[in-house]
Image (cartoon, rainbow, N blue to C red; front, side, top):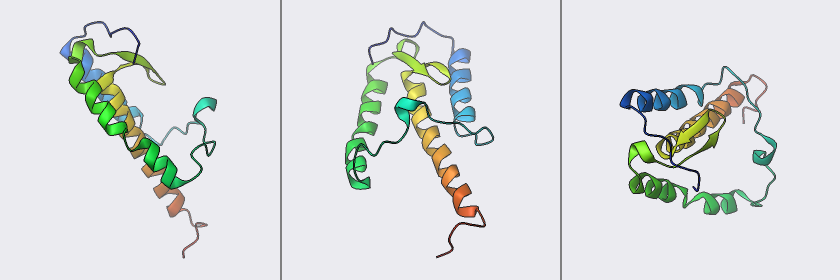
Length: 115
């Protein structure tokens, strides 16, 4: 992450940012389309190749979290605006929750194959 550091924020502002990410990202009441650069393209070729590619991501997130104090974490743009490094970790987890809910919705559809 090469963005400038987030300005120092109060504990209240940090808490509000975390809560916003955890409330809005997994919320399926609003359907969203991925922006063009994030739409699936099968660039990994197989589920196994995708899993291998993303296998190191949790370690990178942990290194970012350990390297920076909360108030001075690097920031970057997201659909929710500027997020600090910890908020991006929360965003990643909440995004996975959103897709899990999406899969459960598909499986619950009466037209979904039963076998």
